[in-house]
Amino acid sequence: MMDSWLLLFLFSLASFRLTRLIVFDKITAFIRSPFHEEIDELDEDGNTVTYIKIKGSGLRSWIGELLSCYWCTGVWCSSFLYLFWLGVPSIAEPIIILLSIAGLAGILETLVSKLIN
Image (cartoon, rainbow, N blue to C red; front, side, top):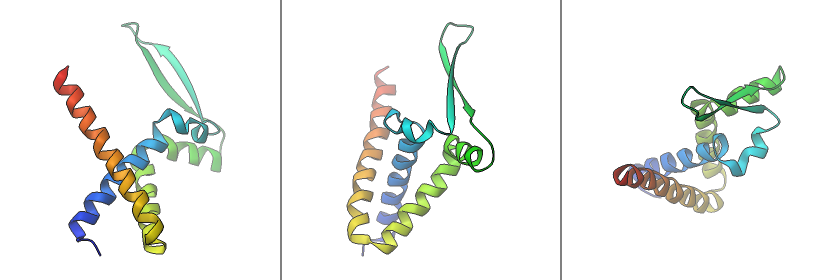
């Protein structure tokens, strides 16, 4: 078993990446589209700003709210990863490590981009 600090670090990065994947990335827009309508508007500077309108009511609206909230989705992603790891660690660990690497790479890319610009 890995050291608890290493596990915390890996789970944190993996949860961060999985949450961003679900809430923001274009590749998973098909998951959000039944629950969200994206509305593009121009602001006073001429920049395009995208707003999300939640579709439907009841369960559909609840899922739409969940998918639009980074914090809410993060809790569910963290729970999923942890339970997945508890249940099937041999399958979950490679996925957690891949998500962690991708999460750290994303953070580093953001930092480097800000330093360059």
